[in-house]
Length: 572
Image (cartoon, rainbow, N blue to C red; front, top):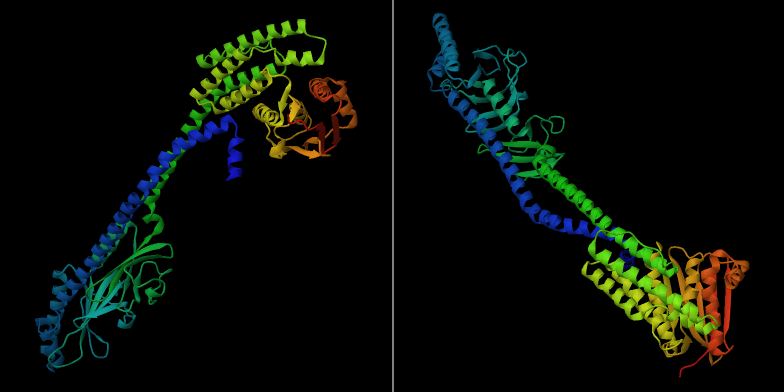
């Protein structure tokens, strides 16, 4: 949690704006999607499932109706129909002429019955030894009942699922039945009757075109008697070995639905999952497209807002940086945003007054170090400066510019500490608070993160110390080699009963002894500002503690720099 908060605190203004706009846009959208997803998914699921089940039921009823028609047509071929009686007479007579007449009459009736019934196809009378007594069409020479796909038996009629017609002139699927003729002479004669192949073909084609489904026919034991997907569900295999005995489910990339007929056989519809899920996937794709549109719009708006805010922020940063570098002649361009332009104008007025005050102080006080410190502390009109910064602070609050608010608040506190006219002496507690505000400003100014760790016993917080002695040392650590993720440790502890040791240690790149000498003696261009600050620290320690204080500076390359102050303990 703390790591996450540190990450957020370390984000730039641009990232925060982008994240906030993205969250603001996506939270309502995602909430709507989540609330509607279950309802829409359930509706689509029920719709598709109902369609598949209805189609399966319609197909199963069509096949069942065709089988019932075959059963009804077969009544015209069995006893006591006229055709069956003639067949019985033919099998019993020994009279050749009478037998010839009966033979022609049976053949004529057989042709007539199948011709007048559109649902009937091939019809064959089969004798006791398997010989073909009569037929209305040609029949394959290899015809055997055993190879037919048996699906069940009902009312002494055996039903066989879709198979290639046994008429060699037809290569289409048909449905067939076999039943005993039951002649009075008790001779064993059976009837083989096929449906018209065009009826079966129309049923299967209609079902496939409605929902891209494939069909299986199962007998009472679950054996596959007919399969449109023989490569996955071969004939004569048990369907329940790869599925459950339920009425629906999924396996091998297919959703399956089962409908069981009153005669005991079942029809199974197989629908590819990709086809079944196509409508649901279309809805999901639409939601993804809308999410992309929302995301792009949010990013564009966030970038526009960032550009609108970024320019004024950079101008304020440049103004503050110029003030910190004593460049009071720097002037920013207008932002064309009235609130920011008003604050920048106020800042320009403040800098002009600062320039006038600096000139006045430089003329009057140049001799003593204490007077020089007094000049630095009183060169700004505190009331005007703090009022102006307070105005900037409230403008930032009104316009929700949190980073500007944080920066101005820290600067206001730091300047208040440095400008209050209570002398040059402060407490360690006040000095540490001032250091905290200074570090806050530096975190905003620079593009890397660092951490300042302070360790001190509460009993030493009220100890007296010259003002503004810790900031120059920490500033030296920041300027010389401190990188992203760096750390500055400030440790204050008592030594030798009456002294405090103040240690400021960083883990930066470190300095050579020559560079330390140049900084302390202001012998290099880059060391001027830091050298002045560190010499100010030594001057104030010697002045206030009358030489009873020590200033030490040690450094190792690639390890860091340590500055140690040893001062007497003064609590009064």
